[in-house]
Image (cartoon, rainbow, N blue to C red; front, side):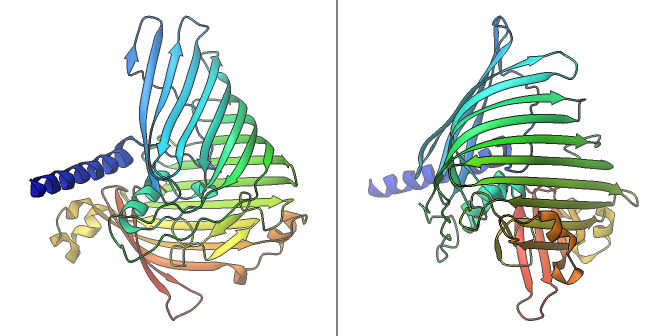
Length: 408
């Protein structure tokens, strides 16, 4: 009987792990701190006479919350002035309940203007700018590698979102939120039990009012498949805290350029600058190094900067190139794509009240940290293996990393 109970317990654990992985890969969506979340029209799951209902599971895993399970819900009230009620509710096994509730209304069918309000108690991370939630959750679950730092925020937000076209958007947001530190609350992963998650750094506990101008300028034919064109997004931000006032500007520019046949050159530049706070205010500062920025360097090797510059170029060969190499003998060899890449970045703390433009204007080539490497992609981004070398030294300069569900 005990053996049967043990086998049943193992089966339940295995089913739970499969459910978590499936949900992370198929169902989850990611939100980025310095990336503009889009307001896209949804297809209803249930369509009643006077309302449409859409819901989507939320699943994640990190060292501050452990497993997190929840649901996103949207109710479109056709007969009540076309309002949309939005809500999300979830529970972190180590962190407790988190939620968001709001209402929004769109005007005009062509290039709609959307106005909304929400109340929230959620977990945030500045690292969302360059590391997606799905990828980070899978790395933490499998490899005990949690690349993000987290903090809690609770408050209210109002916004106005104006579509300039099907692809271009500008938005104004004003929110007031209370920040709180989050400690490391779990040390479990499927593998690498001899490793430990690093501690989650503290943030200054205060209530902050924030005004933001956000924009997306998109000249790509398709967001999911990298077609030729440019993609630009950015945030200009002013905060008013109990202790400090800050100004920030965060900018991302991407270019996708086909070359020969199905081969492609992908380029990205990211720039961030903030003034007005010292190095105690972790909720405002940026880090660099490791996954998402300078992969050959240690994770977060450079920390607490208020000036950030990062650029990368990645060249992807087509499948036929791989077919002429020894790798063609591996299973699913027609799904592999070889790439070469180079990255360069710079991070520093330039003084809380100095002009960021002065620091960027004094940049020299020798100020940048750089790495180069080879990458092997499986099934168009499902998995990616990078072999990279930092160029600032010869000893302990190589690093091999695995990325899952990564988007450029």
